[in-house]
Image 1 (tube, one colour):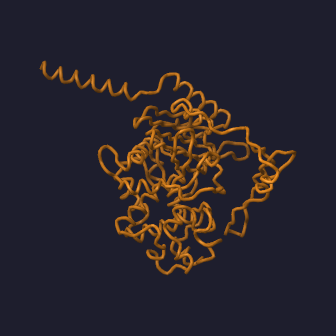
Image 2: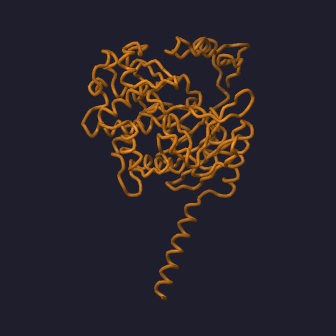
Image 3: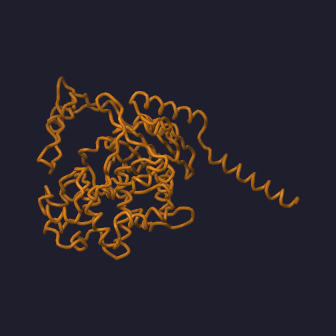
Length: 428
C-alpha cells in the first residue's frame, strides 16, 4: 500500500508540474487578451468568439466568448463547431499532395493527365497552378448550383479561363473544385472520403466533417449577418459540389490545434509521422508573390511584408517572425495562424460575417510574442504612384455576366475605397 501511495504521489507531482509548466501566460497577458477580445466584439457586434493559443508547442490558452447563436442564445464553448470556409483549402492541399506523392506524379504535371476529356487549355493547367491560384480560372460562386463537378467543367470548357494559365495570381475557388475532381480520380473515393483518409482520421480530428447534419447535432455555431438592421443567423452553402474543396469543412478550435501542432512539427503529432515532411515543406513555399486578391479583404496580412501564397495557405512576415496562415470567410471568419520557428499558433473564430478581430490578434502578437505592429503611418504615396493605384477593380463573374467592382479614388491628397455602394472609406 505504501509503494502504491508513493507512486500515486509522484504521478500527481509530475502532472502538477506539467500543468504549471504549460500555463505560460501570465494573468497580465490573459487580462490584456480578453480585454481586446471583448472590446472588439462589442464594437463590431460579434455574437461569439472562440480562441486558442499555442506557445512553445503547448496549448496555453483556450477560451470562448459570447453566443454560438444569437437567436437561441446558446453559448459558445471551447468545443463548439463552426464553418471554417477557406481553411478547407489547406486540407485539400494536404490531400492532393499525398495522393500525387503516393503515385509519383509531380505537381507540375497537367490536370489532364488525371482528369480525361477536358477542353484543351483547361487540360493543360497544372496541379501547381491550381494550388497557387495561377490557373487563370474565372470565379463562380453560385451556392445553389448542385451541378456535378465533372459535368460543369466539361460543359463550360475553356471559357472558364480568362487568361493563359500561369500568368497571374487570381484567387479561385474553381481551381480547388478541379483539385476536388482530381482527388476523386486518384483515390477512387468521394472527395470527403479521401480527405477523411488522408487528413482527418490520421490527425484524430473528432469534430471535423463536411456533413452539416452531423455537426449540427453537436455544439454548433451559426454564422451571422446584418439583415435589415437585425443580427441574423445564416449558414453558407459550401456543401455544394463545386465549393466543397474550397470551403466545405466544419471544425473547432480543438481540432485545429492538432493540425497546427502537426504542421509546426514537420508533419509529426504525438510521436506519429502523419505527413511526409516534404509535403509540409511544399505547402509553405512562397510561390505566388506581389498580388492583390480580390474578394479576400479579410486577409489582413496582405498589408504586411513578404506576403505570399503557397499551397492552400498564405504567408507573411510580422516583426522577426514568419507566419503561415489559412483564413476562411463568409458568414463566419476563421484565422488559423502559426509561426513554425516560434512553435506559436493562434486560432481565432468569429461568427459574424467578415469580422476577423484584427485588433485582437495584433494584441496577442504583442503580449505573447512581444512583437509590435510593424505597420507605419509615415508612408506617403506620390502622385505618380496614386495614378497606378486609382481606378476600378473588378472580379469577372460567369453568372448573368455580372461584375463585382470596387473603386479607389484620390481626393485632396487622400486615397479612398468604395465597395460598390458603401460610400468612400479613407485608406490609411
